[in-house]
Each structure stands twice: as C-alpha cells, then as structure tokens.
Length: 230
Length: 210
Image 1 (cartoon, rainbow over the protein chains, first blue to last red):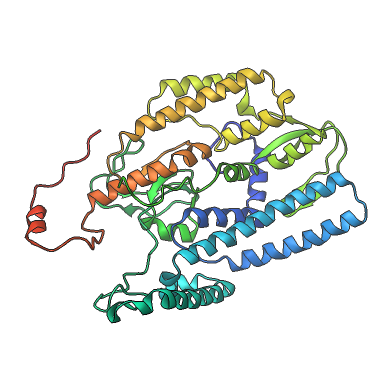
Image 2 (cartoon, one colour):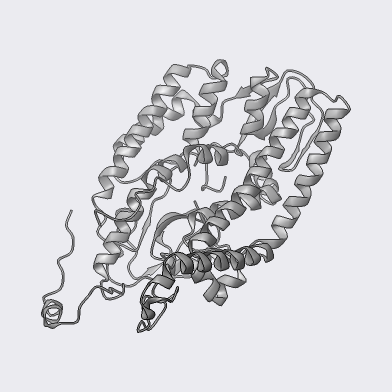
C-alpha cells in the first residue's frame, strides 16, 4: 500500500490502490487500526459507521437471497467471506472503543473533549456503567470506610484533584505512518539524534515515513489524518 | 520499571496483522469464468480464463483453495531480487532495504497455499527467512544505540517486524523519556523534605551510554 515507492508495483496497482483507498472498508480499517494503537479514545466516525452498517445489512440480505435461490455456492461463499471481513472490522472497532471506555470511564465522563468523541449509544453505555460501578463500589467498600474516604473520585476529602481516576497514558510510544506532511514539531531537548535520523530541533514527517514517536505531540496530526498509526 | 504493570503482548495479534495484509493486491490467472463480484470492499471481475486479474490476497487464496485459479508471485518475490536484497541487507549497517510492507505475511500465505505457482520455492523461502533474520538482528543491535529520543525514524521496516518489536521498543523509549524528564511526570510519592532538595541540586544526570 502506501509504504513508499516500490519497484514491485506497476501502474495498474497504483490505480487500484487509489480506487480501493476510498472504499468504506478501507476507511473502517484505518479507523480500527488507529483506535487500537492509540492510548486515548478518538472521535467516533459516525458517518462511516452508519454507511458501513447499511452496506453490511444490504450484503447480508443479498447473501440470504443467493442461498435461497440456489446460486453457485462458490460465489456465495466468496460473498460471505467479504461480508465476514467487513463485519469483523466493524465489530472490532466498536469493541475496542468499548474497552477503552470501560477502562477510562470516569476520565472520559469528566472531560468534555473526550465526551464529545463518543457516539450516542456509547454515551448511554457510559452513563449506566458509571451508575452501576458507583453503586457497587459504594455498597461493597466505600460505605464501610471512614468518613473522609468515601468519594469515588478522590482518594480522600483533602485531595485537591480527582486522583482515583485513571487517565490514559499519553506518553506511550506508537508507530506511525505518514500520509501527508506534518508541521515541524519542536520536540524538547537535545536528544533528537537516533540511529536512523539526525534531525536536530524540529521533527517533521514527510509522506512515506515510518516512525516510532511519542503519542502526545502528535495527537492533532492523528486526528487531522496526516498520520496513521500502525 | 522492571515490575511495571501488565507485560501485555503486542497490540495486534499475528492473525490481525495477517488480516490487514490480506487486502494487498496480487495477480491471478483464473481457469474458469467467474461473474463480476460486487463486494463491500470493492468490485472485482468479471474473470475470464487465462487473463491476468488484480484481486486482494484473501480472494486470491480463497479461489486458489477451491482450485479456481493460479496465483502469480509478485515481482519482488523472484530469486534474483531477493538475493540482491539479501546482499544489500547484509552490507548496509543501519538501513533497511525496500521491501513491501507486508512481505512476511504475503510470502507466508503464498507458501502455504500456492506452492506450485512459485518457481524455486525452497530457494525463495530460505532467502526470505534469511532476510528476516538479518533484519531482525539489525533492529536488535540498533536498539542498543537509542539514547533517549522522542522520535525515531525507521524507514522500510515491515508490518510483522513492527508488531514484534513494538512492545519492547515502546516501553524502552517510554522509560527513557520518563527518566529524562522526571519533573514532567507528577510523582505523588515524592516527599518534599530536605532529602529530595539535596538530591535535586546534584549535577545533571549522566546520559545513558550504549
């Protein structure tokens, strides 16, 4: 795919690449990969998921018709495989997001930016999740602790911030592929030089670059679509 | 660092990496007529015998399994190209040779399902394994040379190799970053006493050596 110039690909493949790269399956795959590799929850691809759901439903009906009408079983099995692949991507995308929501429930709920990134269904999921967890922890543990320690968000009544809330670790390192040139980013300190690149203060990716980067400085680039996580 | 939380395996399982690789295009030569296929992932065909078609790898493997086509090995999988790549891999110290991003997965799938379509399959297979070994070894030795950076460029690494080194490199670089920036990571255990003040006035930390 877009892994740089290659002598092994001829021009028919390039045309196909550009054609294929605009299909919903390809976009869903990209969203799925990004979501899996990213430590925080990314904006929900509402339109994409809707379109994908419709196409999958349509295809399911088509396959059922084919089976009933006794269509060539080979063709039916091929359509079924394609359907399975698309379903897997959609399901896995939604599941990865749910996992992240469960993990960082309170953090997402408190933070407006994160909350805006959820879909409607995810919002109602997180509300009921929080209700259930609060109730459970209260009944089993919190009500039995001394007065000052009963809050679910704070360690004790004298804590200044909500320190019982786990936050996504934004300093994790991720591997990213560059699709469009990024802004030059100033990465602090004099520790830029690595084995494969000797840029000094400013780090910039050009299309085709594959890099291991710290997640935090590149959040916007990811959301803008300039880079993709691998 | 040593006792850090769950030593999770890599983000993507090997099967998932293969799944991603299965969308790469390959050429097939069908041996029967197949009508046009309107998949969710794209439209392919119609397929006529003895013509060359471009299809995704998963479709090619499915057709091959049912004996409906022959798969043409991609250009980069020829003995001469691979021998050249192997020599250049061995010669160059830090750089990786240009290979398709999913070369491991593509070659594995073709070996498993399209043996008779690949000329000199044993030679090709041993060449690819040698290339893999040389590259992995190269990655390992160059990992020793990382000295606390915030970003590393690794051109031409492949998907499977990325997946293998991801957990270790990720945690290693994160540890470097954390140790080089102690003031940026809030440390709730730090007791503000005379002890830590003395520690802070020490000379700057020695950079980690190879």
